[in-house]
Length: 102
Image 1 (spheres, rainbow, N blue to C red):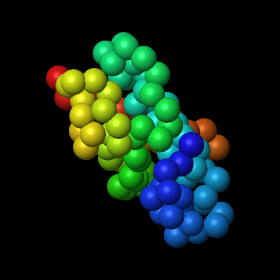
Image 2: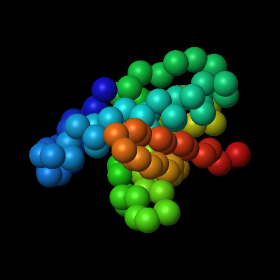
Image 3: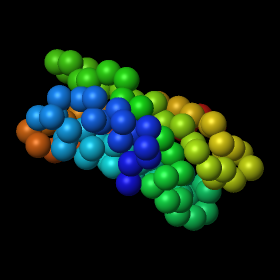
Image 4: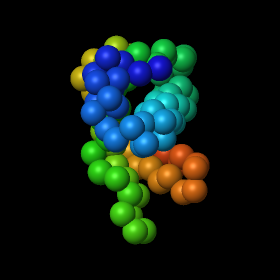
């Protein structure tokens, strides 16, 4: 599920947080695919996008991550197309969402 760059980032994180952060990356990719699927017309593999966590959740503010396409997802979404998403990790759960520019 994780790209080499994501694996490297994960190894640099505290050992106690790695499982939850790996789940965050998986969840973020799933959110991205669900947002794109109706527009792109098909499933893309987990290697088609890179997730970069930017900020952890603080108090009532969600955490943020950047996503970048590593494969073309159609004419409107070439390699390098990117955006942001948000997440929360309440009590062992991971909730993530993305938004797409029109």
